[in-house]
Length: 290
Image (tube, rainbow, N blue to C red; front, side, top):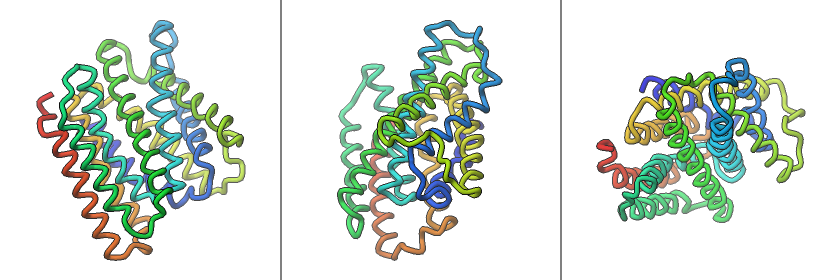
């Protein structure tokens, strides 16, 4: 559980940092750069002999979904949403973790449909106002794909690691980052036709990318998946939500997004967040028993 707590504190500042220091850069290039840096960090620890061919492919696939697809959608959402709303809409990841786990165990219940509808109502409340409707829903939709990808990857790696308890996480994590970097580089080539690295980034932006690649992505994802393999599904779902209030606070008040937010906007944010919180309460009413 300690690994999850450390990562939560690290990630709380990532949303605001991306929305401020890296604003204006191509989102897919940010994903490429972060994951390529993370791959370079863990490449020296990779042990080829510790896994068979099937496990290698499985880990590469998990990384492509959990980090590659997730980052592609998550960073693209910053085009349409301010960073505090990107942080808020990541709140649905725990819901998806529980749903995916229940579908896998064939114990799906209708209460998750109710929780999903409540969460969408919360998004509608927050949206009401000056936010462009089309851009808002594009950003919201991208975040839900991102949430699903991250939730799937956590459970997939957790299942793999529980089946391979003697394999050290550090000796195989490079496979995940390889799959992730491969996915985002292909996505960049197909969608934006830009080089994988933002060659026009300034010094401050490269420092931010170095931090995000080594600490937030590299160590952060490693600690998170390692912690996920040591906790129950219920605890994992709860910890996925712990970063949201800290990230929203950092984005609004530390990175200065509060300057453009009125009292009415904050109230809508509060009401919408409350509805999403109710959705999570409904979804996790018995999650700790799993």
